[in-house]
Length: 253
Image: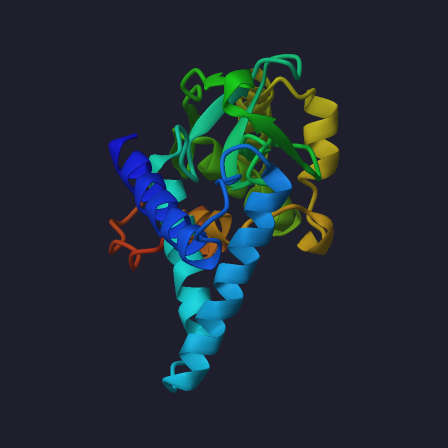
């Protein structure tokens, strides 16, 4: 990561210059004592805040912007991005979608948060224990073909919620589609169909790990499902408005 190395070099140069100015006749301990390095960094931050106050600069805003920029740079250089589908090699080879990452300290590696269909929590795994997942098996339904896991989850949940109001014989066809979606989700994720059925049943999502980006999947089915059940054809729909990453997968017909 050349950009990462340049940033570290610039920071090292600045901290070394600060140390030499603060302790001009003392041997450097910057690279030999972690506690000393942390204290020196804290002293530099303190002096920077004094500098900001003296010159009328909003130090809190500057600090917040710096941290946000760092988070963005880390995300750009990460081996996995939000929305990537991965296999968890030490979690029974289950498959899921990256919804974020976390780093507890500078000395620990980044763990990626992975949401697996049918589980109300997310796994936190380092990149060493992740590999790209196989492609999601397409599931054909009377409403279109779900080619991605977010489409399948959204469509399964929608069909389940509206199944009781669907007219016959469409209701039977939807029940078959629901089973087909459940099988595809189970085959891909490694979660049993029974557990998926229980977890994807309509309920309040407050206890789910649901990331904000996952809500974009709802754009795949913008129309009232009852309208589609009453007509033989499937009129083309205008494209939904763009969403932030990960981009929603479009349902193909």
